[in-house]
Image (cartoon, rainbow, N blue to C red; front, side, top):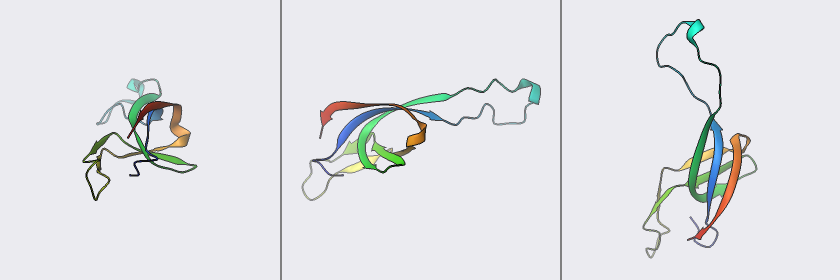
Length: 90
């Protein structure tokens, strides 16, 4: 993670979901809907198709390393509904 280019964002995106984890009668299947997710993190990588964010960073200011990330998530840009830049920068 580069300290100078790291930017925080909120991303609202659509994900797949499953109603049940067992066999259910077809007549009981729920009406389809979108599952909207909201993720907050620092941008680690971005391409024309995907964005990778990191919600948790530790040891970022330590000498000789740029920190460690936890919960790293890559979201396809076709799934993004809304994206908001945050003012906080590392």
